[in-house]
Image (cartoon, rainbow, N blue to C red; front, side, top):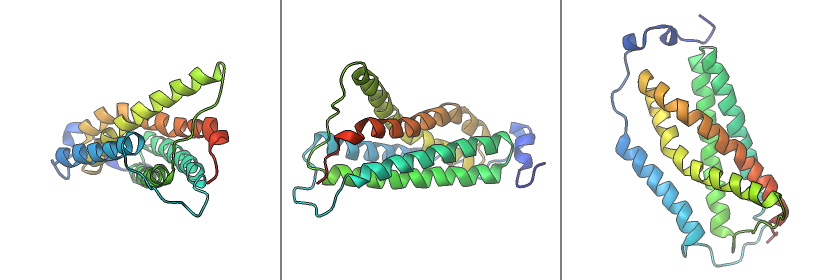
Length: 196
């Protein structure tokens, strides 16, 4: 067994005893719905700051891109760790990915609350459909990953290994895609943010 690893991965899945049978379904669905509802309300509802802001809020999208890149790196490291059967390191990188994602959510919501209007993409030609394809898939999968990642976290943490393995087949690639394309969307949009 490697240093910091666990024999749990080498055992039969039926012989691993979960530390809890709870899956926190109501909490996970509730958190997912609230998070996505707040984001939709900021984009399409009357919610938003009406006063003036005394600092350049366009720094927030830059911070968002940095946090997304950290999430992507942490997820890749978590994937490599679990492939090497190092559960302890895997858990650490997953917690790091959740932390950077949570910080991203805070700065993302802050920006869209304070911003008087959403920046418009000004690209033309072939760049335009490429950008919107990435943006639409990123946005849709960002909503989907919230409950998937939370279920994966709970089932992994409570050693409900079979459930965890089933969901991470979807959660890991989607989360990697969302974090990576978050950076790409920022790079497309960066020239169109107006200081304010």
